[in-house]
Image (cartoon, rainbow, N blue to C red; front, side, top):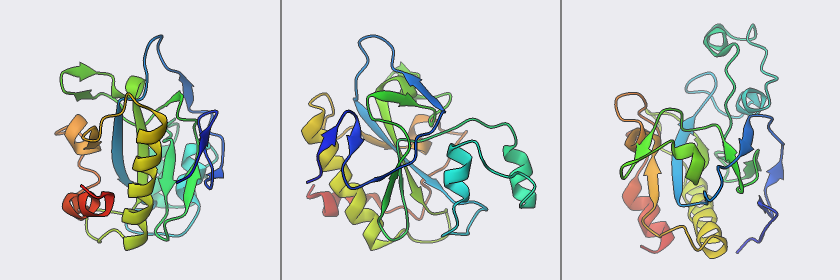
Length: 182
């Protein structure tokens, strides 16, 4: 189990994103939103996602990136294909990952959620290392934040249906549950 101190997860590489702010008064961690991302789509291993979250993406480096020009987004964590973790925003702050969203009748999911991006896409299976790392992070978050219920994990597609489809059909929710231990 990794320790969380001052909102930062031990064992994760830290790359502080400017795309965050304070949570509203009284808002705590009550939801984890699982995302899938690759830049450009379907390509893995480069640092493009990190650059996007740090506002340093050269939008002329690839034709797809022109659609991201001026976008200001982040996530709390990125889980790379090898299971390594990069943290961009402390869990106690609000990362800009969910956009227009609602979960169990509550809008503005960024206010009360942790956003975890998995390096992946709709067409390719996520790696075993990613499921293991994600399950461990969920255990760490639940241990540190008693407001986070065991069933409070949703996909971006669940909180923004019709607008988002990640982590996509390649994400195996039953495998995550088995890895988490139920």
